[in-house]
Length: 316
Image 1 (cartoon, helix red, strand yellow):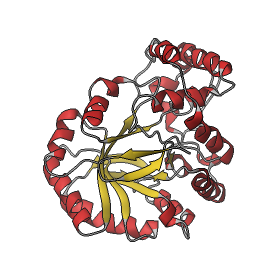
Image 2: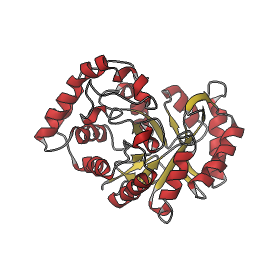
Image 3: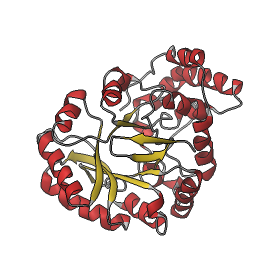
Image 4: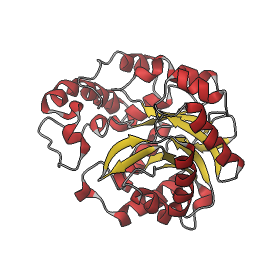
């Protein structure tokens, strides 16, 4: 797989990454299988999918443990990314905690769960409105100085917040939702990343499964699948948004590709530092996603995708 650099510190990863959240959290629990997920993570490395992303809040905690098990004997082959700053209770995100004390303690816990002595990319999952970002970011920078963390990143921040963090210590990456049905980050945050040589890591790049074309208005979700309460997955919203995926599918057929591959190829075309992190628990979908790195869309096709309608329904 082709590689890309994120940040100015020389971190190089496969053009497509792997988001591990759904292996342990947020989606239908009946579909989870730790053994299969571990096989998927290891297969990802074989394919050149080397950015492995998790968070302490996923589970909570269990996803980091799963990733740690999967990487035994292969830790040095990946760029291991995790996140900190969200606190969950009973499986639901309840609060943000960006205090330096919490970040330092959480880092040590994550290192143990991940079975490693360093985290390659440690990301502030959300900015805590009760703590100046300079304080949170300064604490993360101290972890770099201590050798526990190689680089630090942000998630779901504004340009103003990113600029304040950058004034304290270099920002390696920003992780935010970006896809053919969530495009607003391109208005300001992505251009800021391009200007400052900061990596941009789109999560939910396949619209939480919608852009694969495998979800229709008859699809129901279990109570433990957060899409059951998501505004974009009501039957009316899914029905309205079918026009997006139908258009993507038409373009995919012209390339003998899948809608998911077109959606990922569009993201890769947004900038050389863009590294999508689609999540999957299955090797077959992993292989499909990885192959998107080889799909090149023409300028006319990219313009055609730009004209897609805005998705119906808020993203949360």
